[in-house]
Amino acid sequence: MTILETKRLKLRTLTLSDIKTLYNLVFLDKEVVKYTFGNEFKTFLEVENFIKKNCNFDSNLGLSIIEEKEKKQIIGLAGVIECDYLGKKDYEFGFILGKNYWNKGFATEIGQAQIDFVKDTLKEKRVLALAHKKNTSSTKCLKKLGLEYIKTVSTKNRGDREVYILDF
Image 1 (cartoon, one colour):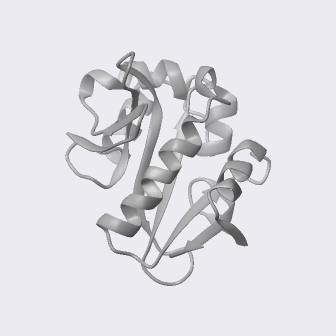
Image 2: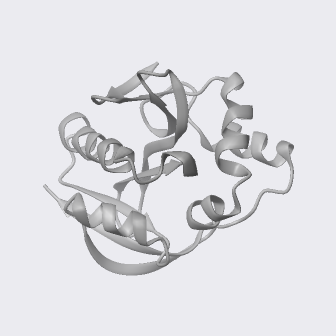
């Protein structure tokens, strides 16, 4: 199911056949995992279980596949999830790209589409994004998208993360 589209990208729900591609593209790269999930995955089975538990197979919320439309190629994960980092219900958006797709404008493009989704489809008044303090590319992208740093939080699974906010 397609969740949203941009000029170059499509965000869609996962299928079981996507797991191996994601494993090779995202989960085998220690740098990508460090800045996003916080913990390394030691086996394919761990990754498969994580994906089945945390990714989106049938909804417009949750981690979903980012696909480059022209090549019909998976380039990463992105999604909007419910959160409460600031003491009330909010929505967090995020993106995780395979290294081959860094510095091509994909993060900004999918990020803006997710911001629009939260504002226009979910009808929320603000959106959050979290980033590892050493992930300068992501923090630069979030600032480019208009988000502002407000505080650092300690998350259960991802470790310390900087919280960025955009009020609509």
